[in-house]
Amino acid sequence: METKLITVLTRTPLHIGAGSSVGAIDQPIVRERHTRFPVIPGTSLKGVLADLWPANTAGNRDEGDASWLFGSEDAKAASAGALLIGEGKLLAFPVRSAKGAFAWITCPLTLARLARDTGNPAIQIPAGLKGEECHAPAGLRLADNKVILEEYVLEAKAEPDATTCEALATLTNDVVWKQLKDKLVILSDELFAYFAENACETAQHIRIDDQTGTVAKGALFNQENVPSETLFYSVINAQAGKGASGKEKTPAAALAALEKQLAGGIIQLGADETTGLGWCSVTIKEVK
Image 1 (tube, rainbow, N blue to C red):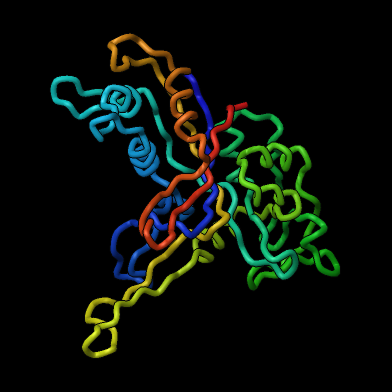
Image 2 (tube, rainbow, N blue to C red; image 1 turned 120 degrees about the vertical axis):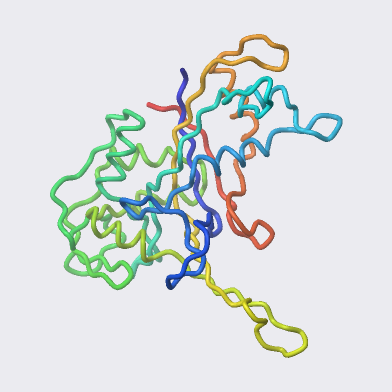
């Protein structure tokens, strides 16, 4: 079995909905139940990747290769597909900063997850961070080593580990991510979870009735979106399978086919494609 990492950096706000809600948010996003971190379900990633597969001359998807990679629902030849696509886990979340415009925040839990999923020894997991302490670069600090994120005043105890920053910097090819070393802030798990749950965008939607000039009945609602510049990662495994010719194909061939299809580096995920939501930079990386 072969394994690679796919990273998704949101270029525009992202909405993968969890259905309607009776709470303050009418249309919330999908979140992990135990951490409340935003998440990209593996089904969403798999569906989008499968839909990108090239069409044949008849205007339909090449069913042979599509079935090999993504599975088939054919009752006579059902299969799960060669690609095993995991959910997109949150790694870095953007928040407002009093200095440097914004910061990418992460925490020991998210770094530990990445270290576990990749086996990369360069990822160092800080210990002992308390509620209002952080590790932050000099460019985000005010006087007395204070860092202001949203309404919180934090104390910078140290710089983020250099080897960790170097490991994270290689995760995506997006040009904005190159600023990581100047914007990465490591928070406690508790404060990161607070921001991940409460610092997403809330967009108000209305539809005006042409006759009355007021909001149409039932057409006022708010929608929660993950902000742009949020980084997710997903572990993709591949297993052997049979292509359209019936010949056995290797896991490496499956991943190579996916990489070729994603060479453009941009995909659209979630809702509201025609109004600009969900456009993401996507990069496939080796698992170290």
